Length: 304
Image (cartoon, rainbow, N blue to C red; front, side):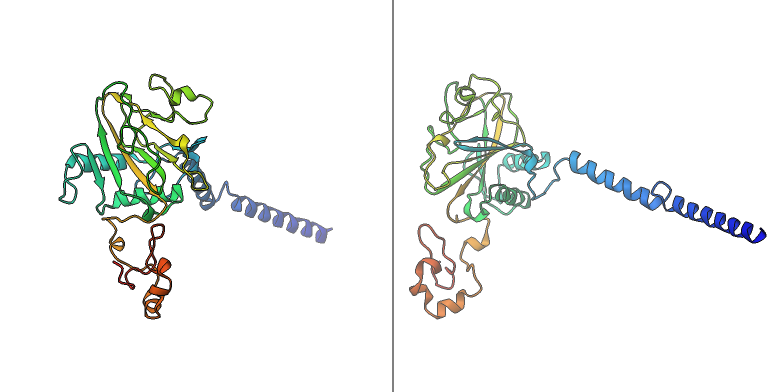
């Protein structure tokens, strides 16, 4: 009986020890595990509620809305941060970029090295899947009170033309809000509520200027033919001021003042060897280029 009682007491002690160990190892009692849980909760919260990080080059697909397939139009809510908008405004307000006055008192070409502008351009490339080398520099223009009924486009012309050579897409960045006007219209688009996309007097246009938003529309079909439905107009600014940045994306590489490699360079480390073997004459399209191809070894072939 004594032996049995001893065994029972020992088993009870072991059970108590095991129970204590279980409680101590529980995430509700272990400080490290509780901290880990808090960290996971904070990470999840920051992922869903965090605002755009200044200088980020990533694209958030949750903020992108597909508005139309004919033409292909996409709206990116909050593409630019407040800091980026303010930086672009400061470049325009300075009136002098890298010591050189830009186009006019109301339009500026940001074709000089600037880390913020470069970051915006890289994010545009990530969103559009078009390389930065195939784009022109960002142009910022200020619009103030304009004549009623006067429609212009973002190509700088009185009437829209989608026949610009090798133009693929246009990105419009709203750098500021406006009190009234400035809506983007696509009168030939095939959307259900077509009237709001073709009449400046209509309200509720989703393409109205909102600071930080970006609009992407393609001027060509997937087969590279011109998309006539991409003809667009901008309603005149009736009240207030509007700052808009535009970026044109092309089918081939564009010369850029802010890109040292665009002056004269090779795109492949083997260019020198290929040039010595006479490839510049044997394969001129690939080595030097053509109207539709920039050329891989322009420097080694002494074509620039």
